[in-house]
Image 1 (cartoon, rainbow, N blue to C red):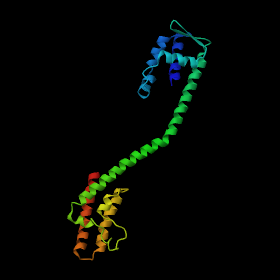
Image 2: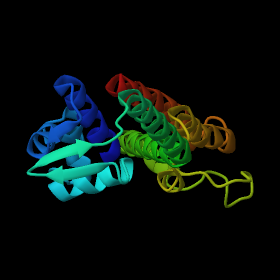
Image 3: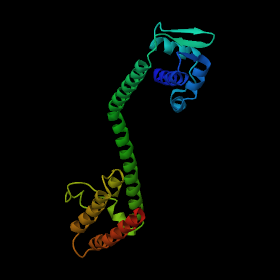
Length: 220
């Protein structure tokens, strides 16, 4: 990057001066007032290019073709057309390097974005889970779902209760709703029709619907 900045500034001054000489002081001033340098300062931490940096860069770009006398840089056998071509070559090389770096970084960047998005979504789903469960547990009948209805008797193959749901992270709000609905359905099917437990299970369906409606209204 230093080579591009030095060469670009040097080319501009030589064209303006219409000579093969450039003041080193002016060259340094113009370089360090370059807009690109100021944009790079925050990322590089490098405030300015020193005289030493500039001279070393010029030596690399023009080996054995310059001299410094009384603060004046003199260029020998200078061809502005060749300098312009060199500048374009450096631009193209830098562009290709940056493109390659971006491509190399894309998988890591995509992974970070995906991880951040997933983390945010997971936190939101956990918040919705806790909010919905807390609201549902305000109803007295929700206590019947502290245990999995019918599981101990073998009537229900998979245990499903409020404690277990609170330990899970749902993939979506619909899945969370389905878990709670399954609790109500299991209790309704397990208890004999007409019993107190059966009536409580039936009544808890309305409480669940009310809770889900409340949480959805909050999310909207």
